[in-house]
Amino acid sequence: MIIADTNLLVDLLVHGDRTADARRVFRRDPDWRAPLLWRSEFRNVLRFLIRRGLFSLADALEIMDRAESLMEGADYTVLSAPVLELAASSGISAYDCEFVSLARQIGVPLVTSDAPVLRAFPDVAVSPAAFARGGSAHSTMR
Image (cartoon, rainbow, N blue to C red; front, side):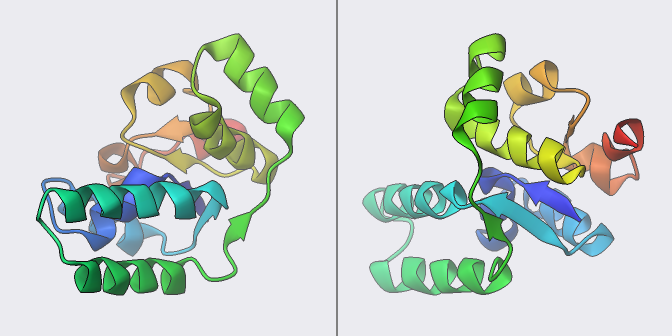
């Protein structure tokens, strides 16, 4: 089980430069979890792709449906206090700290390509490429 940040979900479902890494992560561990926030962030990415003319609304709705199917029953409400404590102490956005907090709460790695999150939370955050190669922040969490 991993916590997948929104960009990892996008990379898995929207073909791009980082899709291969996302697919390797999924093959290594297909049990992805995330805070409920992922839905709003994912919708916003799709809105951006529609505005750029890269996807039609129908395409975006299909991708969102695939994402929701993948994450069905795997998204969580997170408590505000730990999120705000992490954000205040790290300078990282509260949005990103929702993923960090959930990873710590469950005791699994957060797979993310977000460089500031990787630097601020090396105890829990691991890049997709490193995770796919077998590296994991999880081993340091046990």
